[in-house]
Length: 89
Image (cartoon, rainbow, N blue to C red; front, side, top):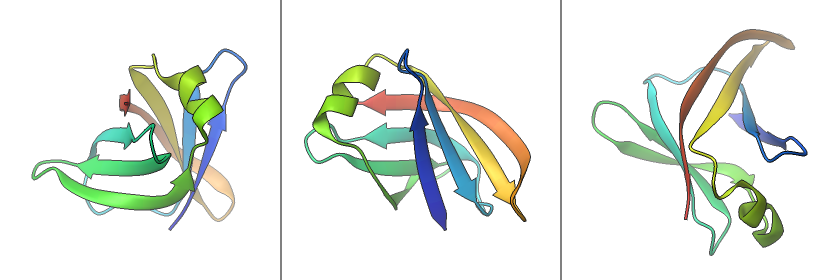
């Protein structure tokens, strides 16, 4: 699945996913040391590492965000969106 990251000038985080997940997302976690982005799913807290990484400067800009938006894309159209918990440590 292709996952892209967008960040506003004020540091608001938005991910887009080209496809759907089988489980509901509990939270998105960014490891600020490596820049790796992981999605954590309900109910069993299964972790999926993504193809999306974040550089150190961007981590500093978004580290105080508590939630982020996720947009789901199908056939080049936005079909759904939601807010989920976001952690950058």
